[in-house]
Image (cartoon, rainbow over all chains, first blue to last red; front, side, top):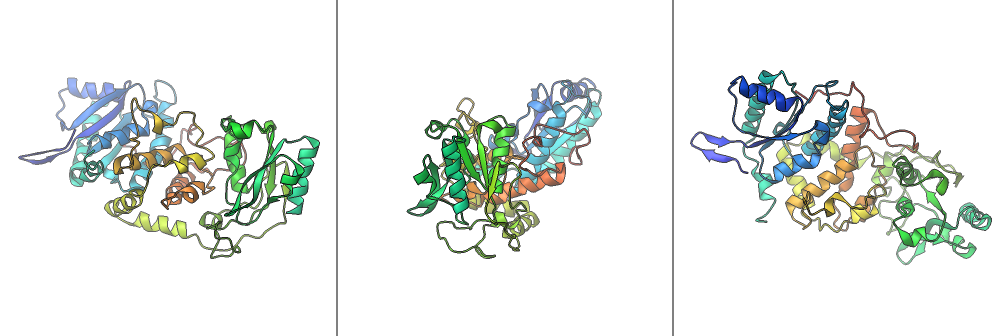
Length: 148
Length: 290
């Protein structure tokens, strides 16, 4: 998966890790409501943000994502009571660690999107695409493989 | 020193411990020692060269140590935090180990070179360490020591990196991590890296590429830091063990400061205090979440 150069320039590829109960349903609502949004995301549906291992985010970059979105239920709304609270702590650390190691913060977006927030999902996606577009293709990560 | 040796001999004689894990003189400075009798106990030493964290030897998977019997282990305050971590995570039972705390004023940055402890030679992590002895120990030996006042070069370096642009930080870390040979010394020496099967060894799926190239190296060091977030006791062993001289302490220090700032947590020697990752508060800060 790589960002592709088109006539209009760089089109980011963004991997979105979302929880089944809120954000995925919210994204579905955005679709059934015919909301127009950037088509740069590839959604990976998981049971809960608590299931999203930081390794997923790293693997997405390894496989050529230019940006990553992690999204799930609002606090107190988790289907499994506390998965999003656990995730919030984990991603707070991951975000600052990635930044410390040189990954631009704009490449990673975290959000809470409920099942009824189709419009918010659209805004999250559009915002993430815009920020990643500013960063440009994540060539430096791809170059790490050195032909491997 | 005499106090430590006498205590070790007493523990062995009384049967309170079958082996006292400490340090002794070796061909290249001090080395870990496993004293099972009075003669060996008389060779135990403790001074500023004793940088090794001995807590990993409490892992029962290290059968060559486990078979010696009930252990007593000599712990500096940082090592005691590691033991507390193992107790907290149910790897060790408190009643299965005798802890001999030593009063510590810091260790040398280069233990093999020897020399006396001064503001120049002290290990960087000891500059910011505020514990001189541990409350977790059964026995405490040594004379009370005053901390050396020395500014932390490591904290200054972290601040420098924080002030850089992401591209500059990326370039810095790629330069450092390019030397990583994936020898896993950092993992082996870490008191809290005890998983039977490390994520880095899994092949289906392979989360972390095992060959030493940029992508796998970055992935390994990121995930190692994530897995140690809130658990790292800052014993500095990863950096000391690294044959390539990668400043791993900068990463662990950065993560520790994030954990301290965000969750108000500092790893201590009380096993009853839970780890910050794996627990949560409903009012945790979330300014980064849209």
